[in-house]
Image 1: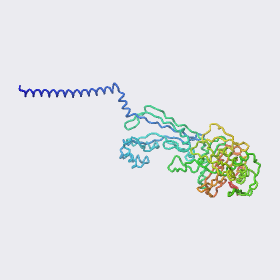
Image 2: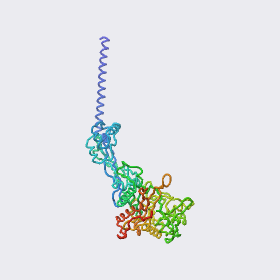
Image 3: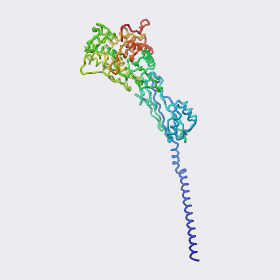
Image 4: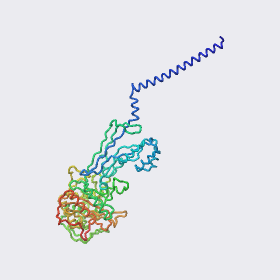
Length: 579
């Protein structure tokens, strides 16, 4: 065989060998891959099946939060003032929703949304898995939305805060935001107490995000604790009704009423005008949010005269039988003149209070000195926090100059040159009413009688109460007579302060008093801002509110009437007398 033939035969054998080797190699690799896959399948399904289970869990098991129920706020008798009710929140997974879905028209209608805005949001957040559509809906509306069966639209249960008494208790209770976090009032002051602790649970979901099964409880939700206020809702309604009526009748700028339990310092009622409805905040204005009884300061005016008189009796320089010469009816301090409504001449200390004599009380103040009067004011709680723990409380101003000028001593004695809030004024009168004991004030119901501090002698407080009785029976506060109960109190009429100082035609009408006067049960302060109907004195505007509120409140508290039918005095103001 030729060399050429031998070469061809060898090449053929080499090509055939190489082909067989390649075939064997490919076949071997294929068999190895198949074997490896087969082994992995056996390993995953038989030897180590936890991997597939874990991967499945990653795709179907989720951890969800469990909303905690916020604590209930009640009045002293268990009437609900703030409760959390279950509602539904509609949410969506934009990645699962076709923004052109025709049924979204009905969804927008039911949820009160603009259809174009809804579709725009779904397109904008198409890469996300969660957006809110509408929170805190009535369950029935949520059911109608879910009944449409639109893929990617879901619901979850939440809670919504509801206030049964509405605007009547708004300034005390306050409100929460959409996440049930306190924003105003008691809801803010005791937010941590009322707030619960959310829980967590593992759930099994399908590929559409729907919960199929609750698997395990990681941490149970802890509901918030309840809060029992000192407020008596019956008295709160009564006070709110009367205050709203007088503000409307006199076209006033606003008003405040505070009612305290004389023997415990508990706040039984606290109302303001204007108010707001915490259940509907669509028309809410910031100026209506303030609890003016605590946050707003004013000069108390003549309502301070009984306290100044108490300082005079306590000093020993004056007795109840002492007299003061108020002639000629005015008193000058340089360019400043103090005036009475008329020249009362020589009058008793009781008449100084009953007739509200500025000249008389200023002469007493000159004899005592400013420090003596200021000291008693401070002991009664003026110029200091009440300790009530309410957000935004204003402390007020109680002057303490290094050296008192005569005019400063005079004006301090009848409540000018200082400032208080309505709650502080009520606290001062509470001390006069209960025999000289200052109790800590509280918006929470007291389980037992608190420990008080004696700041005034029982004898002096009794003598002041007798003077306050005379104010209602024969003085400037005749319209404060509460029907079949005896009462005592003091009128006050002060100029309101504007941008340029005291406003000549704007007044605050005040009445502070207690009843029954022989054994006081309640102290009430009424203040009406800028009445415009012609009447503006405390005895004309605020005193009648006191009379109506106190008369009805004492009946509600089952206090036995003291006066017979023929003894009950009509609440009217005698001609020529002013409050």
